[in-house]
Length: 59
Image: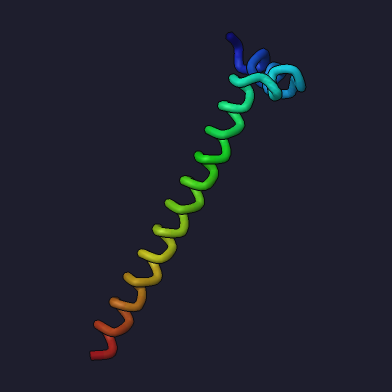
């Protein structure tokens, strides 16, 4: 299946209301949450590293 065909299928209301369409939507939502969690952890790690560098220079 070509990428364009798949995108058209995702837009089809009949597909979205089918069990496979609901599974696709659930997987997309789970992946979005995972992406945000990973981004958040990277940002937090960057802030921690910056604080450690700052305190290391201050000493």
